[in-house]
View 1 (cartoon, helix red, strand yellow):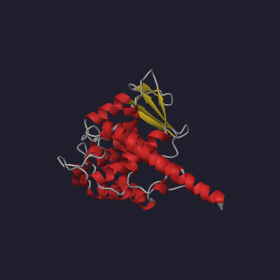
View 2 (spheres, helix red, strand yellow):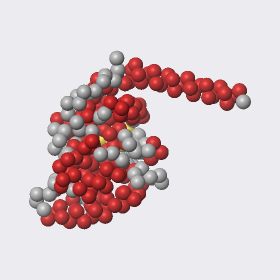
View 3 (cartoon, one colour):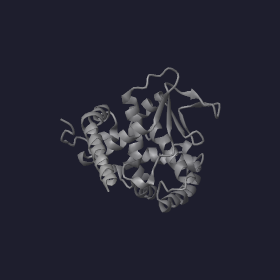
View 4 (cartoon, helix red, strand yellow):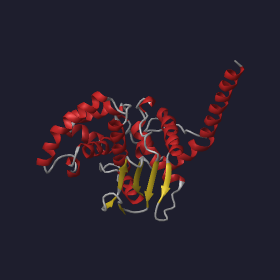
Amino acid sequence: MKAALFAALARLVYLAYQELRFRFYHGPIFHRFLNHKYAYYTSLPWSLKIKFLKLARDHYEYFEFIPRDRLKLTRAMKAIISCAAAQLLLFLPTKAKGLSYFKRIIVYPDYYNSRITSRRHKGEVNPALKTIVFSWRGIAEGLQHPDDGINLLLHEFAHALWLEHKAMSYDVLDNGQVKAFERYAGREMTNLRADENHFFRRYAFDNMEEFFAVAVENFFERPKPFLEAQPQLYAILVKLFMQNPITFYAPGTKQKPLFR
């Protein structure tokens, strides 16, 4: 009995410590790194910002970040990478364990020659090594134009999420919505090959995984045009990620300060 009470008390103390550490350290720091710099976070309603920051903090502490080619990987850079993971997982149930299979994130300063494909890459996902790879140049280019439907962070994390769902014994995403996506994508990829003016860039028709990654990029970066061009697919992604990015984008909305 005493051991159980002591364990419960220790857990309460630990949770209180974690909350204080977030309120006075991670929260303000991440907010400073992200506000007015990461469009999705900036546009979130005040009530969701704390949840988002805690999720970003969790990934910041969970992943092993490994710089390559003498890159100086700063706290701000790691925070920005972590918040892209939080963006995809924000409304998914915690039991889904999204991205928990992957352990390491490697960051190159520029495009790099992949050891797997021997080709020049902006980023890639390696399930065998439980690793996600980014080039910081690719990340910066994606963030510089937040409404063009090209975002390396979202693209590679979408790949990782898809591969994890397909390979693991647990469900990361809702199986019914994944099947609905696959049915729609199978038909639409044929249209994409034949339509030079398709809403998605040509890269999307390479395979189902690339179609998903490109769809995710456009879902978060160009939600309104996406809804107009592909309403059925957009609706599937709303159910899949349990969020509608259109509702978050409200420029000029005044919000109370999070931290004082």
